[in-house]
Length: 395
Image (cartoon, rainbow, N blue to C red; front, top):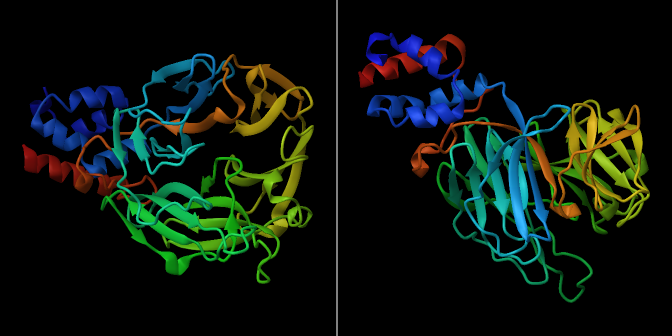
């Protein structure tokens, strides 16, 4: 049937189909496989994908099982599909570094450090295990990781920051840290330590925040005279440099382990906990204009006295919380009403993020993993023209 359709019509049809169908159609013939695994086609399909879901991970300590699933982002939060992770953690569960364009980045270092880092697309059931990093993890040090997308080079990257204890004073880390970056297009790590920050970033709460093409952490100067207060550290995936974002004045002297970074809608958010562990209250701050310190605003307070342990994320102006025994909770800050979602797991194991199914990683060679992003790829009529021309060359 496809032989009777003009290339542009075929492309228009295929780019509007779900990922599951396209994976099957890629096996129909060589022409369709070449078309569907084409980077421009994948970008076009990603642009037109409006089926936004929620990616949810939690660990059941009684069954000793880590569970991944996609859920509908509706009032019921019903399950869309259960997912099978391609690798097994040597810990109880993986640290999830983030989600971007249908890719999930996992690190097996939650309690016992390993160098296992995996980039996984559950929609197409493909994954890439990264090679061993260049800088070793120091026994008395710490290692942070961030995952994101470089829109200028159309590449997915993992940044790795390795701190070592300062000898003989083990109360501080040695500055600056070693920094290296992995690019999916090359499949290699390379050092960028020349751009290392002169402050310490923290991962007490396991998630960095990805927005505006940068990965964000809570940080402070650790007594360094050039930056003694708390700040938000941002690593730009395009320029591969660290930038500083000032915190609200009320938070610059707060114990850094009481702070967590997140994304609320299209804005950067900070969660300020009353205590390091088992807070009775927490406060949510939002940066209304990205990068403008004066735009930080304290939005609301969350009462955590009834078993609530932490903020997991935000969804549709509501807050996802983890609670002892009750599991994942949806909290409406306006009405202060809670809804129990029936998803149970250990408090720190919960990970929730918006997710869109994509074809990224469908083609398995590293040279073919360089895929265009929606906002920076060829768009509109040019997209269709490129695909039409490539389709003709295969006919």
